[in-house]
Length: 110
Length: 114
Image 1 (cartoon, rainbow over the protein chains, first blue to last red):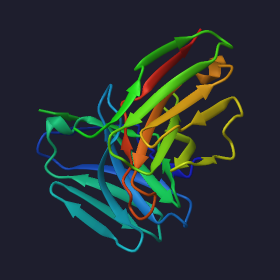
Image 2: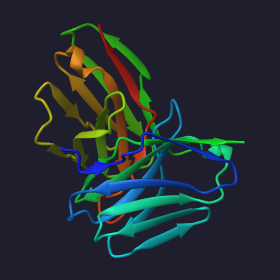
Image 3: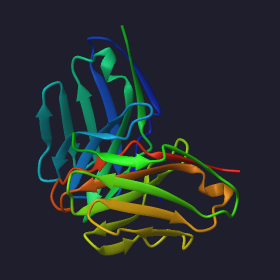
């Protein structure tokens, strides 16, 4: 069973606007949530994380919001840049294992 | 630069012919992971090593084995590849698997089974 779900396979946003990528999870035991970014022919690279005891974490243009009651998190990218075009994976951690979503492909158009 | 290296990047094998994928790291991390990612699917953890301690996921097929001869290297052995084993195989490392403990990924090996 997929415990981490990214229901939007793709998203297209204009340069300079906000990109919002969403993620839902089912396991309330997850203690950390991470976002990874993946370019073609490269492995995923860590972007930003949030602990389950927080509801917001910000790093430059990237902000992750966590709503534990709704079991939902989102990644906001403001402003979006063409170089942000990539596949974004949401991942949730319990003990050692990372449970990944299927990813959302973001395209930022000029 | 410290990194996670996977060789080869592309591997073609025949149905039933054993194949070994390689991963090495210069990060000196304690934990090494192997993930399988099929097309349009989420990466799925197969197993991981904490130092020399091997931890298999419950649903990883017996066809998949792993070796970690030292801190730097970890191998994924597929004893009898089937068509369903065609996938991208990702190796990752992390410091100790606790806290936020970011995992660092290699570029992956794409396995084709003919």
